[in-house]
Image 1: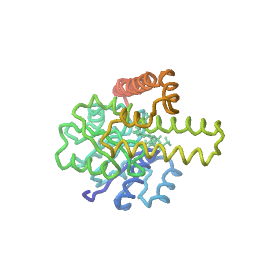
Image 2 (image 1 turned 180 degrees about the vertical axis):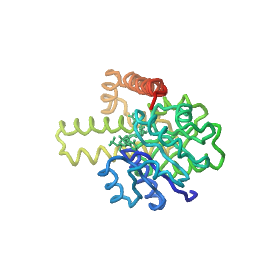
Image 3 (image 1 turned 90 degrees about the horizontal axis):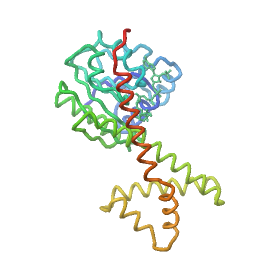
Image 4 (image 1 turned 45 degrees about the horizontal axis):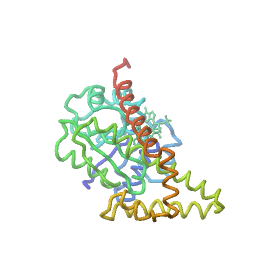
Length: 278
Ligand SMILES: NC(=O)C1=CN([C@@H]2O[C@H](COP(=O)(O)OP(=O)(O)OC[C@H]3O[C@@H](n4cnc5c(N)ncnc54)[C@H](OP(=O)(O)O)[C@@H]3O)[C@@H](O)[C@H]2O)C=CC1
Ligand SMILES: O=C(O)[C@@H]1CCC=N1
């Protein structure tokens, strides 16, 4: 990936995952800047990753090649507006915020020609097993698209979308998705303990099973349904368990959950995409 200065605005959970993943992949820490109002957050990032820290967003973006907006959706408007007068046309803006549309970011920045890439990464970026979808506005040059993709590819899979509207579905799938799998792990570990296993045995067997299933699904030519059938011996134990899950409405539950997440993404865009006076 091309060497460049990347400034993160917001040093919370997702910024930390991207920074950790980039550094683990060999990206130089001295080329990474983070701005956050919270000095504890900044000190912890500096101690953990030796990145440059700032309490002033404007100072953090000076001469940066890429600015990554990693604040909460509710903070996006005021943060982007405050960067507008200091914006350099050659800088690439990457947003990771859920729900916030490119046209709103561009309006708040007040630079109609600014190159902006909207992305939806996820927390496994920390261990370089992230999954990110990207969508660029029409002002983003080919080399800037490559730069955005290179940053996200350094921490996992990077996929371009052909329609910004699909970001809501992506947010429901891979953005929020790690939490669904963690919830399933919590439930499986808890059930295993009720069945008599000690905490460590339950945890390790559960985690390796999750890892093995994901690795197998990625590496095998079979789809998930076929892989599931291969575990499910007729009249056996898995069949009983799967019946319980299906009778309990697992498929419908996931559909409801992901529709709710996608709707929330659209709702955030509609609510927070409006202009308000600063
Ligand atoms: N967490 C996740 O799995 C994912 C999150 N995202 C998106 O990433 C963004 C960040 O989420 P996440 O990291 O979870 O949230 P966090 O709240 O952990 O991080 C946001 C950080 O921004 C700081 N901040 C607040 N105001 C400002 C400001 N004016 N200037 C600079 N920094 C500021 C916050 O400080 P303080 O806490 O003191 O307010 C906080 O440290 C969101 O938009 C979210 O939608 C996208 C994909 C996945
Ligand atoms: O929960 C959220 O809103 C953010 C976006 C995707 C994952 N976390």
